[in-house]
Image (cartoon, rainbow, N blue to C red; front, side):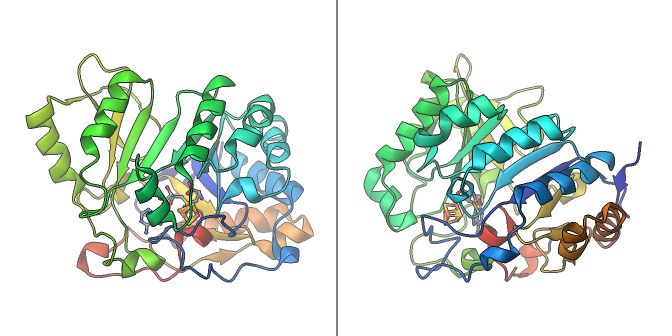
Amino acid sequence: MKQLIDRFGRVHNAMRISVTDKCNLRCHYCMPVTGVACAPREQLLSFEQIVATVRVANRLGIDRIRVTGGEPLLRRELPALIGMLKRETDSTNVSLTTNALLLERHAEALAEAGLDRVNVSLDSLRPDRFEKITRHGVLETVWRGIEAATRVGLAPIKINTLLLSGFNDDEIDDWIELTMQHDISVRFMELMPIGEGAKMGDIGGYLNLTELKDRLVETRGLVALGGDGGNGPACYYGVPGAKGKLGFITPLSNKYCGTCSRMRLTSTGELRACLAFDKHVDISEAIRRGDEEGIEAGFVRAIGEKPAGHNWENGQVTRIGMSTLGG
Ligand code: SAM
Ligand code: SF4
């Protein structure tokens, strides 16, 4: 079996696929109020083209697929793509990252299609703050989406919460309380200097989550949880007796580039091996030609050029935003 191993010995087994760069929210750290220039419709990879690309990726050892965006549920018939990925590829895990505004409507179809897991991005438990950070989101809609996903068996849901100092860092106890009562993983994330995220300041700023985690171990008795809480970079902790758990994703304060196992495929067919660099390999032509060798060569080249890691801690800024990269 072939494997995608880079110059630093990292084996790649996961890929994030952005299916659209459009979004129905405008989170301050991700998108400008005017939105981003979206790729013309005819440049978007079709579901068949995405599946064909994933089949090549499977043969190279990539078997964990996360569908993302932009807001992936804006892509028409998304559950059909999930079904195709489950039936027509050798991916062992197909998951979705969403802001959940449309989750209530699609939860059942997603579960029926075989979706393995859903991550919901939600930065605040307070309606006014949620509206502020997203510029117009309605918190209640997100909760209805989470409840619908739980009802159809997509639990345990993971919630991704971007913690910003001076904005939502006073809600940490409320999130911990939520994990006490519910079988839910709340994953705190650090702001990254990507796209709009590099220009933050007016609403809230970077918060060091390694320091926060150490403080919570002292003050709240958090204990490290053994075993796998997922395949990603989160380290998991819990309050003894809690039903759920807390994850800490610390790209700056405790860099995890050394264990990165991910590729990214944009909605127009660019392979991005590292989210911190704008460098990419365009495999769209090979995909359109149905040229499997060309697609494979693209993966090999992207992996061969993958840098050791970001340099954000020393002022590097990534120009392209998360909504295009496929966060
Ligand atoms: N729209 C979907 C959502 O929000 O879940 C999927 C795409 S969104 C780009 C994926 C994730 O990227 C979200 O959890 C969001 O918080 C995160 N994100 C966006 N910009 C970020 C930044 N500058 N730093 C850290 N995380 C960021
Ligand atoms: Fe949209 Fe997700 Fe970006 Fe928010 S983080 S603007 S929901 S793509």
